[in-house]
Image (cartoon, rainbow, N blue to C red; front, side, top):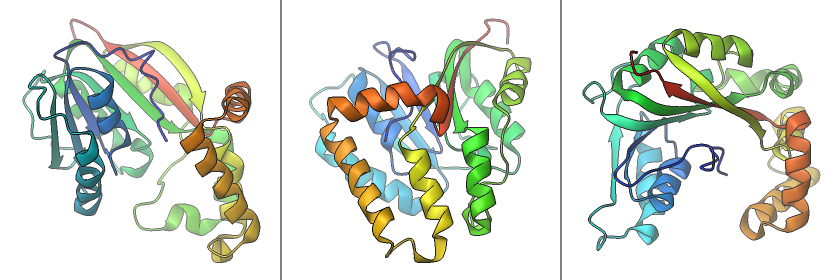
Length: 238
């Protein structure tokens, strides 16, 4: 389930792209396939990095020396990269999990080149508040969400670090009701018939991408989108 729209986050040949908090690799693999780039995924969870490596294997292009793919285990508060290393940084659905998210933003600023692009996505406030209201476990599980962001407040913090926002959109409207159902039936979600059927719908949408559901989600995203996705350029002097 890709959140970053590469139409707004253009990858150029030779770009170094960091996916911070890459999880199981959806964006770092997508970046590798989207452009002739050096794509690096960083996460604390070793199991997720192993899964990412396994998912990447069918897409590996060893005969294309201009494309590189790498993974590393590291904390977002002390990235093992020099200043001004990356042309692009993605941090999707991560900041809500980090106690010191401001420290993570400072590290993103440090490793991103002047003029480089940064994409941040976080859960949208009002759909997330419904999830929290329906289930305490949703946000109190280990590694769960620590806060609900106000998108404009977060954006102001990012801009104060020397970034300018140039695009914003919402994503994953069809997933918001799915998570409300999971929260409502938290203790029986694995066996709940309605949740299983909705999950089948989402898998079908992901795999087949039928025109009807793609159009429906585009129409619903401004109202119901579960994620807010914001794009920034690091100022040349920052």
